[in-house]
Image 1: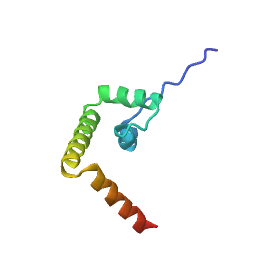
Image 2: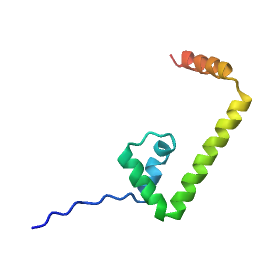
Image 3: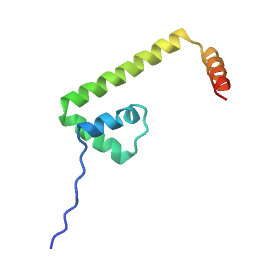
Image 4: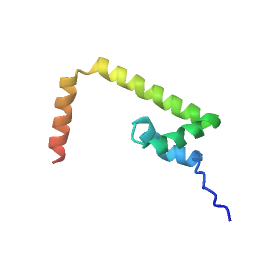
Length: 84
């Protein structure tokens, strides 16, 4: 008997479910590999992730232009204090 190693692949539903974690850098090495392998052959998922990464960068740049770090820190502290 030969033993076969199960090769795991991600499908589009997996990409949808893990997209934000991938974009935020919260996947482990195996998950990143499987995620990126899927993007290599699935143009719709690749384009979606490409769009999301560009959007995140634009938001980061615009937020940096509009708000100073000190202002954001102060606003976040105010929001957090109101939650408690």
